[in-house]
Image 1: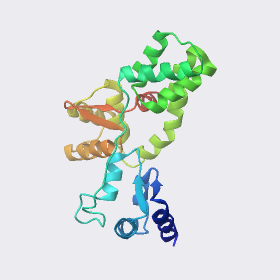
Image 2 (image 1 turned 90 degrees about the horizontal axis):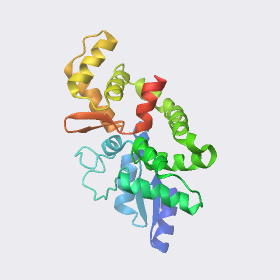
Image 3 (image 1 turned 90 degrees about the vertical axis):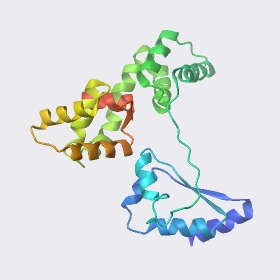
Image 4 (image 1 turned 180 degrees about the vertical axis):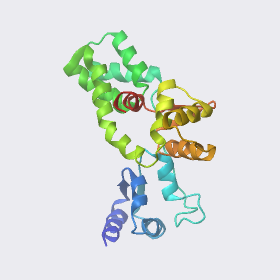
Length: 234
């Protein structure tokens, strides 16, 4: 009934978007949501469905657009991925923000913030806000407060596999880690025999969750504050 009502509004007003934030968590629902979304897509032309999420791989798996077994298989969709800013864009972003507030900030401070926050927009915004309160201590405050913010999420993730923590630790410690480095570190830390398949599966799961990424046969933690939290909080 809710969707029917929204569809009527959308048809009269030129369309209405319905947004599901962090939609990857919908996979835990037992309500048959993919069937509902397929019905909305096919028959309710006044509605546009928008799904956002920080765990892109899991969101894609949930929707199953490319999975013949999914109710949403074959539906047309458009995907927008928000990547971190490059260094120059990050600097301009901070300079523009401070200029708008009539705050002068030394270029060396902006340079250091950009180098350590790696273009993640949320942390750049957080740094800018904290700089107004903490001055030159803002960057360290971002790392400390930010790591506490992500700790709970990491605890939940680490509870799903006995090896996630050690995989993340290996990568955080080395900065960039090869598959063999991760395997050896995890075996050394746990004292257990671990199969190649197990490590490969857990690495792929962490990639799907958006915590790590692969580049030139090496793995790195995508978010510098998550890396800091893994090293300092665990």
